[in-house]
Amino acid sequence: MTNQHSGTVSVIDTTTLTVIATIPTGAHCQRVVITRDGTKAFVQNGWSDTVSAIDTATHTVIATLPTGHQPWTILATPDDMTLYVCNGSDTTVTVIDIPLLTVSATIANVGSHPFDLAFGL
Image (cartoon, rainbow, N blue to C red; front, side):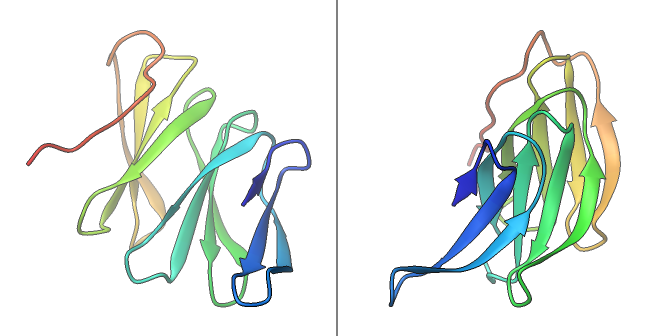
């Protein structure tokens, strides 16, 4: 669960319904994408212009990746190889290589204030 104002993510044990970890991420974190194997979580930090990569076993940030201005929507490809980040206050999409935890590209001129993503069949 993201906590926008404190810039943290809470990990909740669904059996006991208790918070078992609080992870500092970045300012105005909102969205979380978890890889299909459950080993990594990615959180967009809208006012920090970053995405935090979290190791779900250790509850620690393992990478902080730069994005364009005000990352908003994040979406992983079905094979969990690539994370796309819409940067809501510019005209770019940041492309993150999930296995390498690096920014692999920036797609420019996608339109003013890109907001959402989807993959076709």
